[in-house]
Length: 431
Ligand SMILES: Cc1ncc(COP(=O)(O)O)c(C=O)c1O
Image (cartoon, rainbow, N blue to C red; front, top):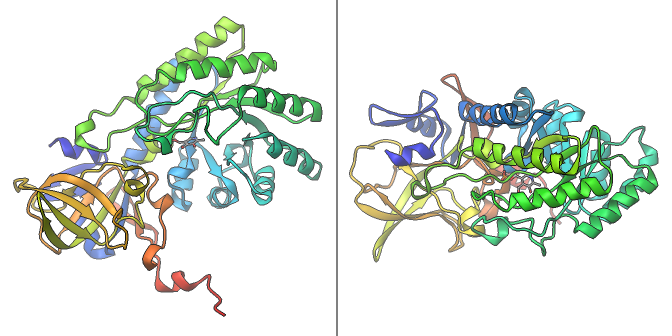
């Protein structure tokens, strides 16, 4: 079944039960309750291997893979990143704290942020190996803080190439000319001059054009522009180059197959090698910064259907989660697919919309999917739920964030418990 390939690598159907890493999803839903998030380690490891194999095949100088923690970061995921030899991209002191708690070593912590607070910067200067600078006044703050630190992290300046990638929604583009992220060519050169004047350790160029794109074409001119900057400021020897992350994945069987990670990596590596050759530049350490492609397909969200309403040509299936654990439909019309966890042999007889229990019409998980006649009390499994869902989750309508399970070697381990009513009130002090 085509829909099955949206699920993690260990998915199978056994005795008419959807089974992940050897565990029946119905058993997990019964034991841990729903909404429930599952992460399949094998799928995450396979994704890391795809990047590392392609980089070692196509890039002859040092390289590294940085996991973009914004996709989903908690203690277990940060520990996994450390065990997997990944750097961790942390946005601000909150994610730095998670990475540090997971004992990610200082050289492997890279910090991003478009308007880092004083606390973010102090935390980065203390705990990170690399700091990606977004704009000149951030650099001025770093220069002011520098005397308090024995050494500084390596500084990469974030370039805004002014070239968009096609991500299917403007809210997931970052590299276009009017983007809030990074520095124009002129700003970047001014920031580089500031580093030189103040003895700050500028070692790299960074840019990121958007998230979830399939056409690598716009990367090529952006790489050229960024290499020009490296030439202009004389970055040589041990210098670093990062064209961000953003490689896309299929979320719906209509979009299959997934664009191969190896093609993306080879394209980037060849462009950097050729661009450096033409400019007489030493090959940089090449860093890739994926989030989604490392973790999205490893994640599955499980929901219980509580009711159904026939409306025109579709049936609303009302689930026990939605917007509060996955705002992606509401934010940018993300598409999803789903399967039931039992009764998989049934014919798909109706077009369903899955919607959650929250007081927003945008509280939708998916629309227009052919499914069997699902009854109240059944569970549905939504694949491609590993990235940018829980990391953007909320307590809207008093929702408590779901429990998260880690599936490995036929075992399920609770890596994040479900929030409780106590958690909901724990920050409040009252009048
Ligand atoms: C700076 C930066 N790096 C990496 C990423 C990861 O992108 P993705 O999860 O699409 O690979 C993002 C996401 O937008 C980002 O902003």
